[in-house]
Image (tube, rainbow, N blue to C red):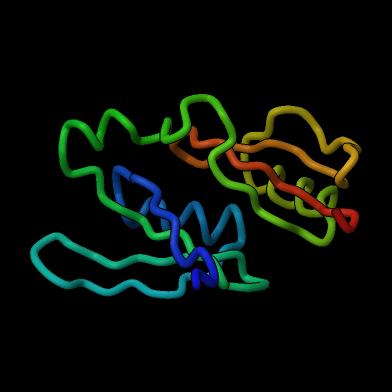
Amino acid sequence: MLTKLGHVTVLVNDYDEAISFYTEKLGFALLADNTFGPGMRWVALAPAGGNETAIVLVAADTPEKRERVGSQAANHVFLVVHTDDCRRDYEAMKERGVRFFGEPRDVPWGVEVVFEDLYGNRFDLVQHNGF
């Protein structure tokens, strides 16, 4: 029986700049940063309020991977981040320089707003209303 989604990989140009963005701008917690070979690292991050599913950063070390940095889902939302207060987190993240596409809006399932990471991957910040 499948039980949960453990990790989602995000291609990055540089581990350290990505760690800085995810921890300082988004408020994620750094769960792991381990080296395991020449130039290889296991870097995992998750929202500070929980870590059931983590983002694992993967260095774009081939031409194919470099082409996909920032566009893992084209211009569509790639990942959804849950929050208990979308408007509060929107204001805090915006103040720290995160780029948003519009402002939080009421939707049938709660409140949401789309933002992007330092490479252009789009995320949906969602406050669920029980849906």
